[in-house]
Length: 435
Image 1 (spheres, helix red, strand yellow):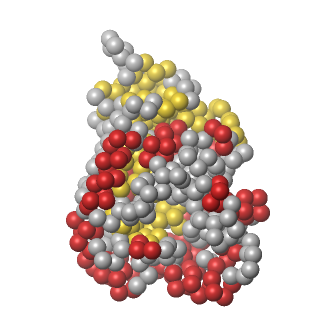
Image 2 (tube, one colour; image 1 turned 60 degrees about the horizontal axis):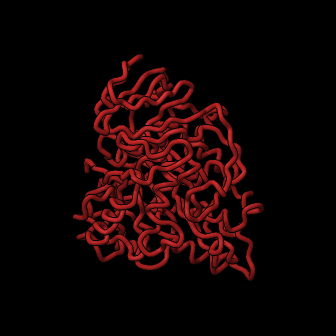
Image 3 (cartoon, helix red, strand yellow; image 1 turned 90 degrees about the vertical axis):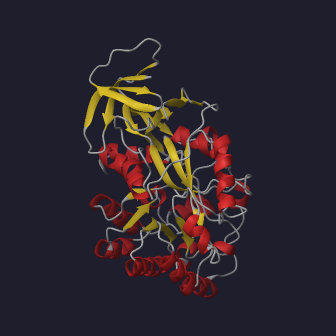
């Protein structure tokens, strides 16, 4: 395959019009002009930008057990359309991914269904320390410190400390203080509450308390810590002073682009964990991204059906889809001057790869896997629910006019999305991790 005359965006932010040659799934050559070889598929890319494929390091694809919301096939198709060439998936399925057997089952399912590359977390349930230490290949351990029901909730300080003490691998935390959630829910929950109460019950302090606790444990045991979906300015301020080289963190597009005013138009569709915050929090999260306090972007793609979301709060489930819109949202922000193309490719490709030790992906580099996305920054189009590939069929960004929509997505040197269609015959690979 030969991509011709693309505006290639490198991780350092430089952009050059170049040809990119692909062979055996990897980038073979990058130059100003490459003569096509016999039988080579040529992709004219004049006017288009070529980026490293997005690595989304936090998704919930619902298989097994919750396939009425999403499954690995539909989710991976949505990824391909959105320019996401690799994903890391969370353990809160049914059964939960808390053992080698459950992890192997997911890997097998993905090998049969996913058109993009895949990796999976092993979940902590308080009784599976051995599995957390040995399960392979897992991208890390996931701990739900709050906002979770069932076996995956770890709200015991002694169990939390035992995990940090005993498990020498990356630990990713959903940082909300469950005791504070329970207390505030009992105090503040009224009859027929508006969904906006969700952001009041699970307030900024709820997030900060858990983040402080996780950082303290990381420092105490010198463990690699990743803090998922930061949502508050006070967390950014705290981490700006207390992050160490062992700690990374992320933010979602939802927390960058939506605030509590969204409850008025979206109702329970705006409900997620951690909740949406006030506009000043959004501004502080943007500043954290720009100054490097926040390392990367993840979607926390967590789909529910419209029927489920239509239940009155608090019976309505928390979560929203995101893999189809994340790249376009960030590229739109770059065109509006909020960030640069180089920063987008760092936040969404190279830094996720570095943070999770993903081998030979996340950059446009000779010899590395050809996970690539061609985007059109001249075309603007509205988010339309009927065109989405996620099984849940809705987006909180419906109606938003965005640019940077995907023209072509390439996974391991194969075209998986082009001309508005997914090639269902392509299969992604299991990601490899250095640690």
